[in-house]
Image (cartoon, rainbow, N blue to C red; front, side, top):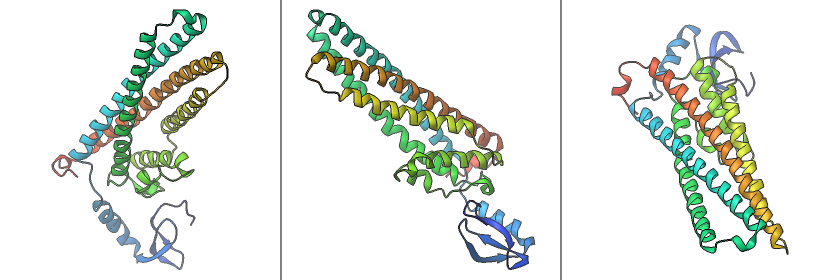
Length: 267
C-alpha cells in the first residue's frame, strides 16, 4: 500500500481471511470479514450528504456569478483597448489629448477594476463551497478519489500547493463521478488557462510599474500594460467557460442519476 492508495477496505496483510481499513496513509485497527465489507461500505456511503435542492441552488448561483465574471471581463477588455488607443494617440500627438476625456477614462478604469474584484470575491467562495459540498457527497465513488474534502477549501491557501491542489480536487470529483481513474483534460485545460491568466496579470503589473525619466517610455509601458491586461482577461474568459462546462457536466450527471427523494431531503 502507498499513500496514493485511496482509503478503503483491503485484504489484511496479516490475515488474508479478513479485510482491514486503509486510511489513505496507514492501516487502522478496523477489521471485518470480507462478506461484511459491502454492507459497511454502503453504510459509510449513506452517512454522507446527498446533493439536494440546496446543492442545485448553489450550482445555479455559482453559474450566475461566473457568467457575471465573463461579462465584467468583456467590459475590462473593451476598456483596456480603449486606454491603449488613447495613450497611443497621446504619443502620436500630445496636443490632441482632451483632459476631460482622460479623466473620464481614468474614472471608468477604476469602476471596471472594482467590478472585477467584486465578481472575483463573489465567484471564488462559491466555487470553493461547490467543490467542497460535491466532493463529500454520497454521489461519488470514493475508490477513485485521493484527497480529503477539506482540501477543496484549504488547497487554495497553502503556498506552492495552491498551484495544483485545486485542480486535483476537481479531478477527484470527475473520477468519483465517472468511476474511472482517467485524468480530466477539461479540468487540466481550465487550470492551466487560469494560471496563465494570472501570469499575464503579473506581467501587466510589471509594465504598469515601469518608471523612467522620459514620459515617452512611461506611456509606452502603460500601453503595454493595458494590452497585456486585455489578453489576460481573454484567458480569464476561456478559463471561466471551461469551469462552467465542468460544473454543467457534473450537475447534469447528478440530475440524471438522482433518486426521486433527493429533492425532498436537501442538504
